[in-house]
Length: 224
Image (cartoon, rainbow, N blue to C red; front, top):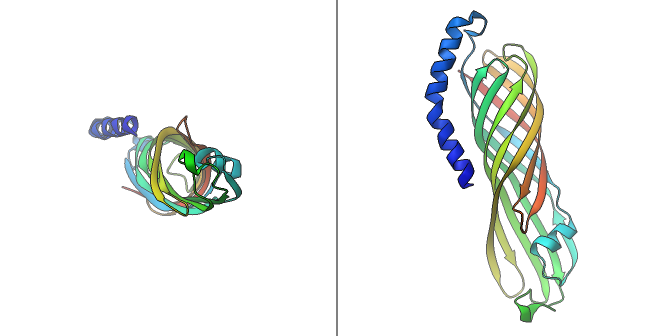
């Protein structure tokens, strides 16, 4: 997260310079002169986490769990802004919520004296979200229908609660990992388009969490 924050601040500080360079480019290339330089986007998504019962035992178990169930389907959201370098290349910065991830199991209490779970039901509820910085490679934005591919770094955080019959605690896991996606852009009005996309996010802190999420999203994009 700290690395991505530094990249984010550096990107924001460079935007005025990039805007001036783009303005000069537009003056020398009349075919791109009328295209907007900045855009904002936002929409909703649905996520499916690649997280099964063995992952739950590995990440949150103490060796005493059985009858584990997981809930890996959730809704989310994303929003942000972008900057057009050229008609085919953009830089994007934004926030993406992947939604909630939950699991439960039954502990036999065998590890209670070793600071493990007490006997009975164990529940985990969490939320995954973060900020992203990446590039978007696409067909020319002045075309009514277009395709794109995007990829970059996602600085994520998974926070939630873990509870058994005798106590409850909070946890936070974070990391910075790659994401990638493809999609379709449909223009619906001048400088307004709808974007349908599939994205793949990795969430791996190299210690306790090693999962991923597949998302489908619908965004509105406003260029100016």
